[in-house]
Length: 107
Length: 120
Image (cartoon, helix red, strand yellow):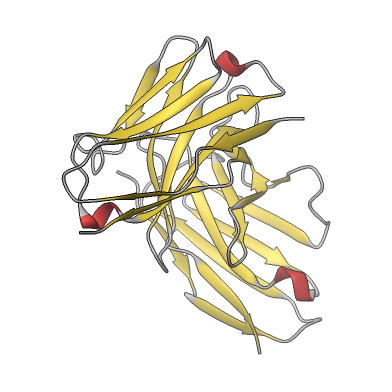
């Protein structure tokens, strides 16, 4: 099973600032990686698939990069609605696996 | 419009059986994988397994392999997650989700979640 490790666990950011979230895979997942956002009381929302492609309707301030084992999600100029928990997910191998999440909170 | 509508919240006692559902609409049900994801209270997302409704090809996370059964009914466009003997530790929110596109394993469409509470 591929283990996905996200860092940091919590990120405190002021509105308008940027944030960089990391996700590391225990073995290569090629570009078969997705990022999700989950707000309290809501289900997850797909932000990024294929490691770097924004899903429809996702603002351009969300960008992502990486391949193999190292991945990054960058949020430029955080808006109030962006504060949430973010998860990465690999779908290169069975079983698919999620990271443990990074909570982006208001500083 | 793609929609996944899950069955309502359940309260069960330990040892009881349960089957929750996820009805897809607005797309060709057989062409996309449907996965199940567990979220225990205050915790992260856990991938449980997935089914391809066209041929019922099913893959499980080893942690859930002998604990649950995933199935699908093509005639009603519905996927299911079932337990034969619930435990208190099964208390969680369960989401179904459809893959975003053919050939992708990312989940672009999610059900609203089914809260399962197991308590004596």
